[in-house]
Image 1 (cartoon, rainbow, N blue to C red):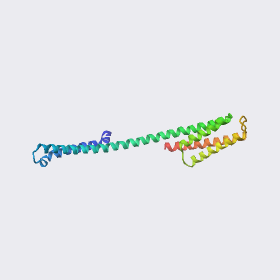
Image 2 (image 1 turned 60 degrees about the vertical axis):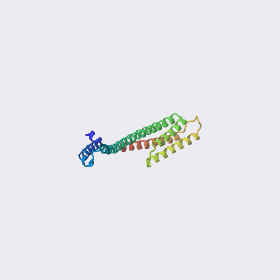
Image 3 (image 1 turned 135 degrees about the vertical axis):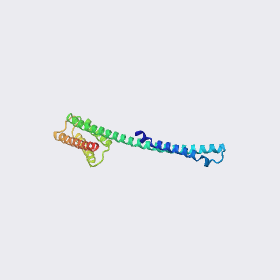
Length: 192
């Protein structure tokens, strides 16, 4: 059944070719009243040319159908790859947010700030849109500004105050919660 569905146009032009040859043979006497061999050759050549034209047009239509199928399959594969890429980027964002918190606990300020930058870049590469995504982008910018202000206000070797550390951790956890909420919402919409 698949063979017939995939090659239906070939069956149609094959049947049409047989019908044309049968009609040409049946009406040859009316068309060729003169028995000149050149006229016979010309008549046969005309019929063969017409059949060739029919086959060519049919094959072009068949190729168009195949290319549309390939295009649809390629689009589906590309959409799947985009979902996988998005999941990887969002997973990277979650990992980096966890690392920010770890770096703060170990007083690695530069690394924490670099992780915020990497999180924002990964998040922007994911190119999420919508109100939740915009809010999360703003939260990341605020976290970065908070980290910068905290690091400027205290000496390089001194630890951050408990209040400052707590504030930064609260912001980091809020970013993580919102990111997880966004991921779970996108995963639910991808599954359904």
